[in-house]
Image (cartoon, rainbow, N blue to C red; front, side):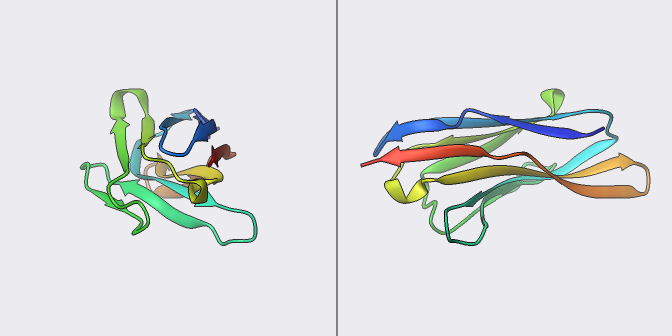
Length: 120
């Protein structure tokens, strides 16, 4: 069974930093695009950052150079380094991965979410 396990959330002050991690566990053939999304109370879930298997990255406009997404394929892990945090970054952050579970079967999997709270 494939699982995505996130860690690294918590409380930070405005201007501070946090690093999120998400490890894919279980038997997989290939992990394609990995991404981080977030959802604040009363708002829709939005893309924070994505990274392809070829390390091409894309970011939500609100990131504006503050966050960096990276991945370690040997560890089946994606990271999100968040710097210059703002109170409006407060949200539950979710990891997502497009996974080839076996040849011909690809699924999009989600982590359980990790809370990030930024105080002013």
